Amino acid sequence: MKLDIWLLLGAGVVIAAIVAVRIVHRSGLPSLLIFLGLGLLLGESGVLGIPFENAELAQQVGLSALALILAEGGLTTSWSHVRRAVPLAAVLATVGVAVSIAVLALAIRGVLDTDWRTALLLGAILASTDAAAVFSVLRRLPLPPRLAGILEAESGFNDAPCVIAVALLSVAKVPTPGLWEFIGEATYELGIGAAVGLVVGPVGSYALRRIALPASGLYPIAVLALALVAYSGAAILHGSGFLAVYLAALILGNTRLPHRSATRGFAEGAAWLAQIGLFVMLGLLASPTEMPSAIVPGLVAGVTLLLVARPASVMVSAALVRLAGIDRLSWREQVFLSWAGLRGAVPIVLATIPWAAAVTEAETVFNEVFIIVIVLTLVQGPTLPLMARLLKVSAPAEALDLEVEAAPLEELNADLLQVKVPPTSLLRGVEIFELRLPSGAAVTLIVREGRSFVPSTTTRIRQDDQLLVVTTAACRDAVERRLRAVNRRGKLAGWFGESGAS
Image 1 (spheres, rainbow, N blue to C red):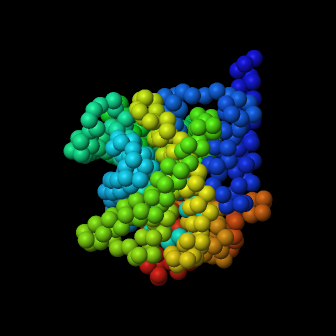
Image 2 (tube, helix red, strand yellow; image 1 turned 135 degrees about the vertical axis):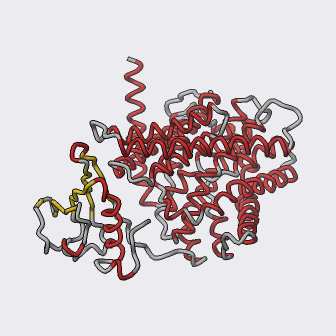
Image 3 (cartoon, rainbow, N blue to C red; image 1 turned 180 degrees about the vertical axis):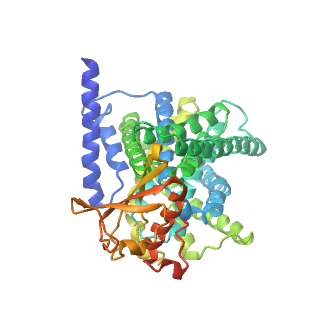
């Protein structure tokens, strides 16, 4: 009977969180505040008074949830959008993280008069931007693809160095590990993580494109399982599981896999469930009665992070890539990147690592981080659209990319493509013969306003039509490229040099 009660409570919390997301979405506030509030409400100082003080369990569950969230981030990130941004994002996730840790630790050491280990721990915990917060907030902003790509790629990459730094600082060792020990350990773990992710991603993609599974619902499960294989495989080899899962998911998400839209939808649902469970658990772990003493130190650290440490990390990283001739950021873009370094669940989860390791003052650090995340979420999230407009870095909404859903027809050595025409697509008004698909493909059915019919060569495509295209496996890629080209530039796409290649 007790299990039934817990299942009912868990389902009720999830439903309440989903309803809250709808309400919060309209107000523009990040949903993590509602989830944390639910956890506080259910906790020892809340309505139900559920006691939860197991920092080690919270750490394990939190890291697992973050792996799922990063997997979803990789699967839904467009490589064509982030490709240009990868060099700067990689510098931000390594050199930028180091600068942020150093600046924040120096400030905390001087202003709050803490010991060096505590100051460095707080700096390492807060150096990481949160992938879930970035993906949920920035994808609703009309930003240029390059700027959005920098923030997305950075949030996917920088968890790994921060986890390594926090783990090393949490080891019961005196004195604190030296700089070269940090660099050596970080290089090894990042190298192993990258290698595992770059192996699992392509191998998994190759296998899924050549093995026809008996049910379409197995493809999303297989893709998510492969991403978690990358995470756990890298962790077993003492590498960075976060870097491995993000790279593997990024590769899988940008491969022409069967049922790709369904896979992304499944991953998004799993990530939402992970976020809800994670934030509620962190709210349960927090003790509101101990928070007042952490408010002032938290505000000091938060202001320093937002106005000094984060801008310094962006400026140094931008200067390095400019000197290397890789990329160049305007001062407006640098200011926006500084303001858009969103924090969320990641810093709070990282704060459980020293707590679980029984590091001195670790519980105080957790409380301070909890306060900082709430304050920065209230300050940064709602003001991002305003900052984008003031700095003139926003961009007009671009045409949605064409989503092509594929299902394998194994016995015929063919694929069935399902294409939905988005509102801004230039497929509208194009006649079927004007698509000029390869000879091995044909539009066999159109679903329009709930009714289906077989089109003729002169049938005009309309907005929101769903096209069913049967193509041989050999020319599937060419068919998708042609459809994407017409989607972007119309029936004369070839004259405009549009090939639909990315």
